Length: 232
Image (tube, rainbow, N blue to C red):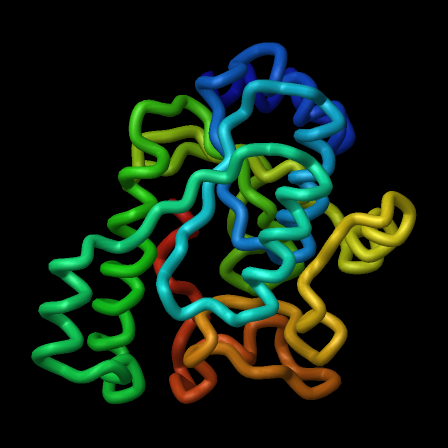
């Protein structure tokens, strides 16, 4: 099915890919948004396609106030329901009780534990039962993502992932935002190209890697939380 989809979608632009997914899969497809600029573009395209694609976000409990701001603006603009998935309270309570509220700074192992509880486990609940998972991943965002393809099989989650903006540049994304007046997180104008949980994200300096602001204290990290991994 992967190769058939790839053949069918090859050469289509992002809007056409979204339209095809809407028509072919409908509510068997789901889109995950973290309200970054790429995800905002896809939300706009999904709304334009007037489809039944479900939309969700991972509410980790540690988001920036600006993220909640753009979340509300997105709801007002597009009228699309965005389902929030929270981490299991018992897991968060146990982790914080045993290790404190900032254990993720102490080791990579602790950081990955926090990411698993706040992101990975809720994600698995969010995509369960769907056939297609749409994301806002672009190839140029990091070396790890360049190893991906615009459509791939996610072995860990047993789902087909499609990245309609995979070949887009940052200029492409910003041009789309301006052309269609798409609401976006104001942190992007303050040096935050990649926005996650507030304690784990900082602004980046000119010339720094796109994801240098994520888990910046981990010098050798691949700057991924585990939501998007390559099978290669």
